[in-house]
Image (cartoon, rainbow over all chains, first blue to last red; front, side):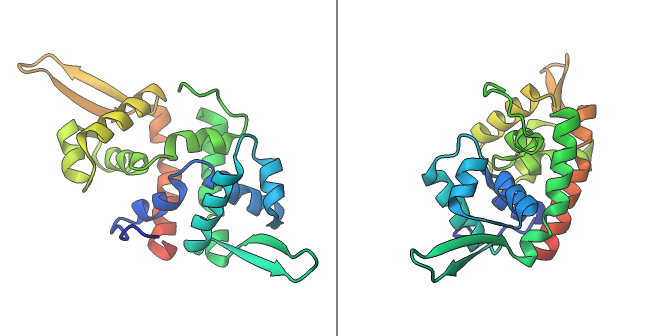
Length: 103
Length: 103
């Protein structure tokens, strides 16, 4: 991240989750193991390619998501969660529960 | 909220937590019970009054935060969490744990 890292751990997490679509991108990867760019576009109703690209880059820079390139013709890229990204399952699960009951 | 309500419960939660400072405002209220505008300004390093005002209004409209007005001279306003807002403790706790370990 280009911003300096805040001391508060909640603020550090919010730097990642605190922009629209990021929680849903992580949920797509928790539910589906690996996704291509087009899979996110299809699964996330209303996201533009530019926003999706920006969020995936941000999640890669934060070490939450990794991109795997396959040297096929044409080359193919899959997005997966890193170990650190998978540990966000608790947060996403708590967000799901709260949203289902009170959101 | 002015946006139409998304079907995905994670998206509904992210509408609230998905903008900078909101998670930290809720944490301030979980830790402190009631806060005045100035308390947030003092506790959240770097927030501008305009942003704080915008976030508190958004949290009020979402039913997460309530404002109590006291008819003192001058009148005083306290912000507190609603029952729905208090239930966000699980999410904020999970964000704190993740941020402390991996953020």
